[in-house]
Image (tube, rainbow, N blue to C red; front, top):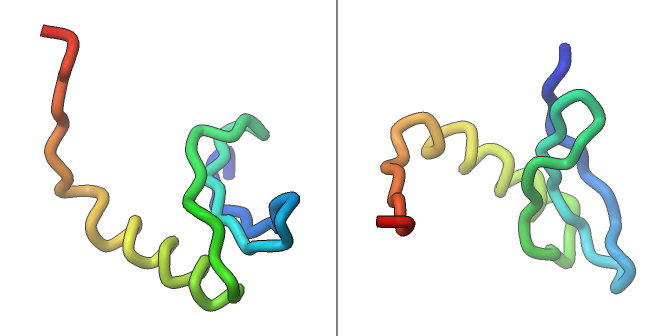
Length: 59
């Protein structure tokens, strides 16, 4: 699969959820104190993301 979520630790030692496509990081979350927090962020994105509105601020 070309796209996936990855949980990594940042320089501060926090857990960060990243969304990658073809090994390129598309976006990432804030840092969480626990891995469970990062997993919850992923589940929230998967649940709420598909119906999210798009705000085009370039107009």
